[in-house]
Structure formats: C-alpha cells, structure tokens
Length: 66
Image 1: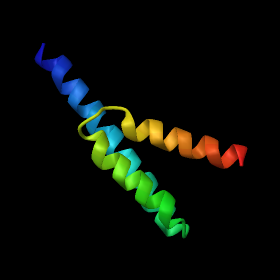
Image 2: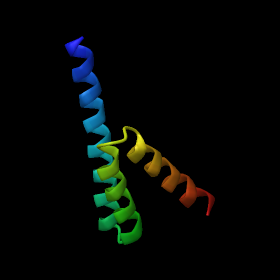
Image 3: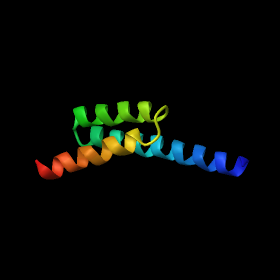
Image 4: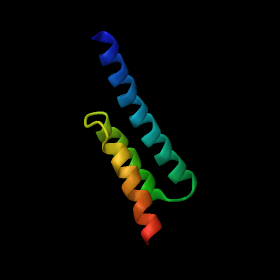
C-alpha cells in the first residue's frame, strides 16, 4: 500500500513541476499572461491533482483554434 501512495505522490509532483516548467517557458517566449496562468495552475495543482495539466491542455487548444 505504501508503494501506491508513493507513486501517486510522485505523479502529483510531476504534474506540478511540468506545469511550472510550461509557465516558465511561456515567460521566456514573452507570453506573460499565459505564463502567469500556468504558474497559478501549478500552484493550484498541488491541491487539486490534474488541474495544471487541464489548464495547459486548454491553453494549447485555445491557441490552436484561435
């Protein structure tokens, strides 16, 4: 049972880290609003798993459809 909890914690942290990296990359490309959105989503994702990933996917879909 401990191994399952360790895996879920690892995946949760990976989601937060990847969303934060996406936010930093947006800042480096000059997209401040997107960067702030993703960094905020990474912060919320630490409490609500999957939130950051959903925000990232929705942001990419919005850009593609725009």
